[in-house]
Image (tube, rainbow, N blue to C red; front, side):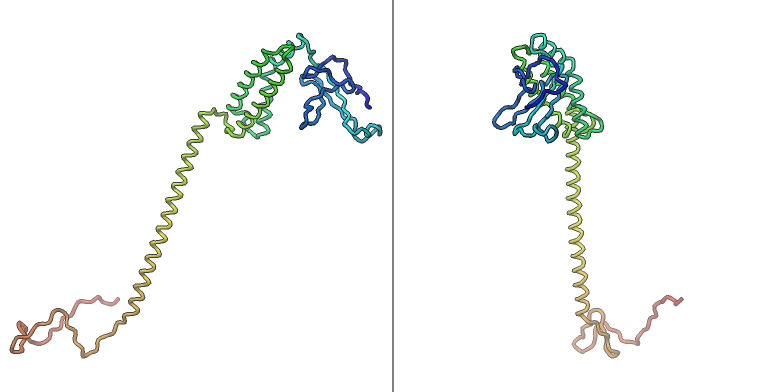
Length: 273
């Protein structure tokens, strides 16, 4: 049990599927399938679309005893489902398609945090969406209005998804696809060069460490060898022969050796400062 809202209008409208609205609430029923819940609303092209729910706790108390939700709809400014109304819908759609597209682009750019607004790829997708919508709009008539409106809604939902992906994928610079691909290739080449330089630097570092270890091992071995071979001084009565010894002849005399007194030669030395 419920009462019609005070804002009830006397507009004679039909729902998007061509059926009359519920007489008890003035709402249109949609999505009545096994998996989707029933939705009550006004026709999509109405200027005023107000939906109220009356079964929430409050006053009067008896309104809360209904097990099912109780809705009331106030719909006004709805185009009539006639040839004249269909022509009005077509003209309104053609006149507002560009403004609607720009509003949608701005809304998506704001939600995706694009500082420079919609990029070029988003705008190109919107142009394509507008072309398809206008093409479908030309085929609209009273008999095909529901079918055409569903097609337009599907086109809008599909391109809204593509435009959102373009806002996330393409840069916030208004670049077209070719320029964006060129910048992306340059970035990939720069990334590959950076990786090669990193690998070369890593290999060079490893080689330097290995050489330092080899040098350290050789120095330690040399020190150990010097420590294991002690150096001793000669005694005063020991003689050191430098060069090849002179062989003696048959008579026990040295050949070509002239004996004489020892000669002492003084070598010049640096004076102490």
